[in-house]
Amino acid sequence: MKLLFLLLAVLSVANGFAQSKETIITIHPEQAKDTISKHLYGQFAEHLGACIYGGLWVGEDAAKPNTNGYRNDVLKALKELQIPNLRWPGGCFADEYHWMDGIGARSQRPKMVNNNWGGVVENNSFGTHEFLNLCEILGCEPYISGNVGSGTVEELAKWVEYMTSDGDSPMANLRRQNGREKPWKVKYLGVGNESWGCGGDMLPEYYADLYRRYAVYCRNFDGNRLFKIASGASDYDYNWTEILMKKIGNKMNALSLHYYTVKTWDGSKGSATDFSAEDYYWTLDKCLEIEEVIQKHIAIMDKYDPDKRIGLMVDEWGTWWDVEPGTNPGFLFQQNTMRDAMVAGLTLNVFHKYADRIQMSNIAQIVNVLQSMILTKEDKMILTPTYFVFKMYQVHQDALYLPLEMTGENVSASASQKEGKIHISLINTDLESEQRIKIFLPGLKVNQVSGQMLTSKAISDHNTFENPDRVKTVDFKDVKLNKAQLTVHLPAKSIVVLEIE
Ligand code: AHR
Image (cartoon, rainbow, N blue to C red; front, side, top):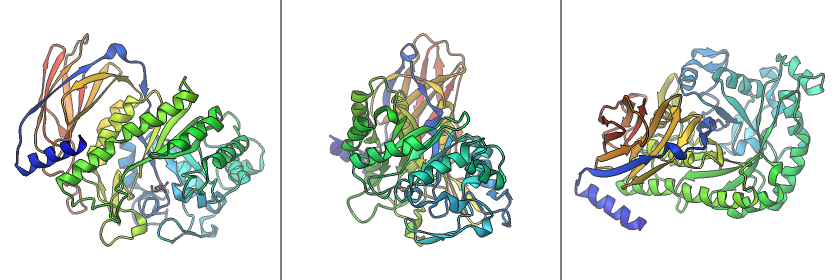
């Protein structure tokens, strides 16, 4: 079936066959019960390539305009994105990270080799204070990923005490010596990362025991309540979820899931910018497969936790292409086109549907690594098409999810309601044909509608340091209102978010 769809799509492109197709969407506000957590819009920052150094952090003495060492241009762009949470310091890096190397006078911090990512020397100048202060500036919640693979229980327990204790305790006093009187609030604590792989190559039974041991000693200090996240499965590893649900159960607040839109069966992952229509449709299929993967993990969770107390956190997701030619293969620096924007929008639309179980997601990664929001090159910065999707979709954060019914093909839609407004995100994945969409909003009184759109001439279009504004959002006008019915003409390969009042 998928193959047939792919063949038809490729043939229609080859024939230059463009026509309007029709989709009918009915929104059901009366069935609404779940809130789309703002944490589905989380980000991820790892000590990897130029994510931290050069991307977020240049240091206080840099010539580049900065605020206490953070790049001003990047800060500004990120503030506008209203990031709800930021995961750090990894990824694979987290399980080799020893937090005590990243506190105190920067000039005296020990160095280490970043074995996971390019073997470069990490000077630890960006550590706990630099990260938690960044979260305060961005107004987001920190999500600390603890070292279980090569660390100790004592080390992680002390890190929690250092960050969150307000008492006369050894770690709180050490923090004070380092210039921070009051503790930070740290809710989200990841107990390991990819413990089945780079985080220790463990079996699920062994990890489950280890999780339980770590969880005992990571304590709640002075009103700070930890939300502990177990290191969850990769993609299709349903057995990992089964064992963790059985052996850890409600001793965890959530478990994670990693799913990348990536080609794994040959050496090359494919170019980020140079791809065929066939590659494009393959990418969408792979991206949308996340729904089945989520459903299967949720079905296992439902068996053990029918009341849905334990969250599923998709704390790594996004596209993974070959690195840009000439860049360090260990730095995972890739360009970002309209195809990536499609993956972002489609994935977020899927996450909304499972808002009763998915409590957080973190796209990988925030700057300069994999499917980034922002790319930097020395003093220059560009916003990616994915950035614009996150910006347009902000309206769904902490909004009431509105179930919908849909007929038609090649369209993805998601609706939510907040502060008296309804927002509908619509995606036409077809490369050639526009979509005529009729949207019914039974029982609702609609006065006005406006919209924003992201599209481009070619699906491979992207922003570059030379041409930073090729892909950006524009006002969307092709929508007509008739009582509680909207008619929308959605151009080929476009993403639109409508606001209805
Ligand atoms: O995001 C890059 C890497 O992908 C992360 O470090 C790791 O957790 C995953 O395998």
